[in-house]
Every structure is written in C-alpha cells, then in structure tokens.
Image (cartoon, rainbow, N blue to C red; front, side):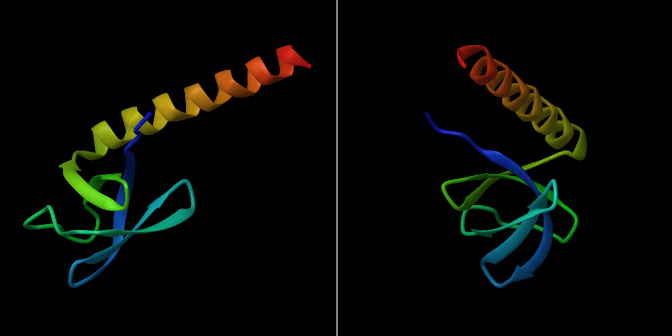
Length: 80
C-alpha cells in the first residue's frame, strides 16, 4: 500500500525540503514541483513532494490519518 503524507514546508534548500506534521520533521525532495514556498503544504510520497495542497486539504488528510490510527489501536486492543 502506498501512502502520501501532508507536510507543512518549514525549510527549503535548493531541491531539498523539510516539512512538519504533528511535531515530526521529515526531509523530502522538491524535484517534481516548480514553485514551493515556506509555509506551503505539500503531499509527500516516497521522499518526494508530488503535489502542493491547501491547508484545508492537509488538515482533512491529517484528521483521516489520525482516525485510522485510532481504529488500528482499537483493533489491536480487541485482539488481546
């Protein structure tokens, strides 16, 4: 299964970016996007920013990932 993660861009150095989600810092490449600025939100997959997204979209994806995480934890508890 492939999964992209929305990150807020907090650092740019040429084609290298650094982003943040929930206090977690991740490095990624910017080769596929023409213009990315500090504060933008990007979808990152396999270490590459593949799409610029709105903050609202990033928040929706983040919420869905949190709900998925909660469900996985719930299912793991049921199996014990």
